[in-house]
Figure 1 (tube, one colour):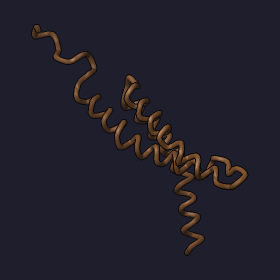
Figure 2 (cartoon, helix red, strand yellow):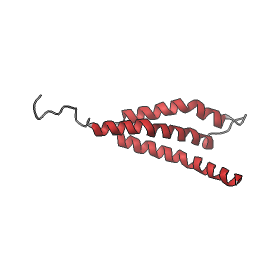
Figure 3 (tube, helix red, strand yellow):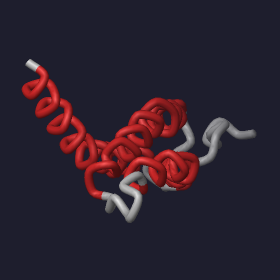
Figure 4 (cartoon, rainbow, N blue to C red):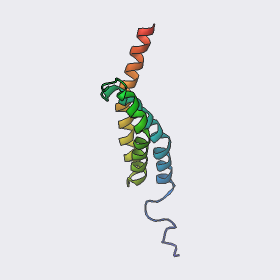
Length: 107
């Protein structure tokens, strides 16, 4: 190798690798849990009244896999992180609201 040739391909330094680990690891896990919990607020209840509870639990592996592969395959890991964070916040707001309502009713 010559002195002008980098050891790694262009854009493949430690920064993007660390970003992918952060985004695809803890951020995706937290976002998947929040999406699953948020689905109880916006998913219809169904005839027996349990679909809004059962389907999020059954769909959790698919939600996690979809977000995980998106985080790994996006060309810019921080952009994927921003999208996943926005999804987590959008689904976390109804969860926090429901918990606050429950706490006020109990107190």
